[in-house]
Image 1 (cartoon, helix red, strand yellow):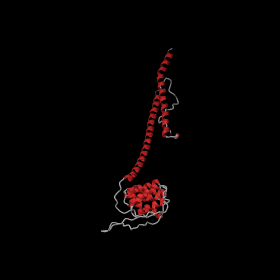
Image 2 (cartoon, helix red, strand yellow):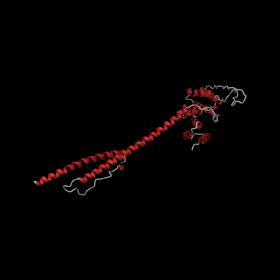
Image 3 (tube, rainbow, N blue to C red):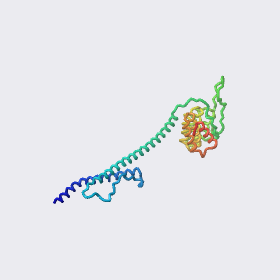
Image 4 (tube, helix red, strand yellow):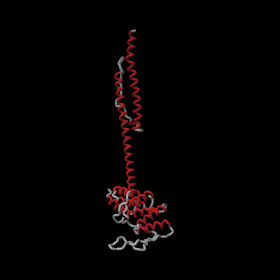
Length: 307
């Protein structure tokens, strides 16, 4: 009888420890499951990279003796829980850091695009500077003269001498070959060659607007930029050159527009942007450029002090 009572007392003493151990083991299983889920986010598809708990329960060859409390087993389980919680915190921090770096990279890229677009918009809306000198002095392209030579009725004056009369305005004849797009473009070209820049610019804009599918549209838009550049308006010139490259990249004068865009940006004291334009010209049209244009690009890069 006394033996039965003693056994009952021992079981009653051991029962709370057994229940506590079972509850802790449930917590451990839950934490291990959550840790594996977090690890799969950190190492997707990397089963070999799964982290193992830093503290393991000791593998006892012999269990506790009869009637011994399970305090050492509970202490080991508590250590495992603490270790798992620390690893969960570390993995969560890694995920947050990776997400933060990704956001920073995206923000940096977005800022670069906004900055580049803002610079272009500034060039498009900025005031035109006062003319301070001569034009670009670039070569007159042979294709621009395909409809015949410039035929002024009076020789234009390029500079006024002291006491001389006001120069007589050149009368420019409009060609008539039966090809409207060609005739309108050549009329604009002749106005430009006669240095009647405002009239030439209005005529060249008309060609681009009325004949956008003609090959002369690319010529007219490029020559519009050159007219602005020769008139001492590099801001407006840069807009015209950029539009020609952006809207008609396959046009025959798109490479020329990038070349002159670099010159216009250099005049606007934006050498870094000019260098980017010359890089773009080499990347897109380098294989098609003639030797003469390559020489002009080299000279432009030198003027902008490109690396």
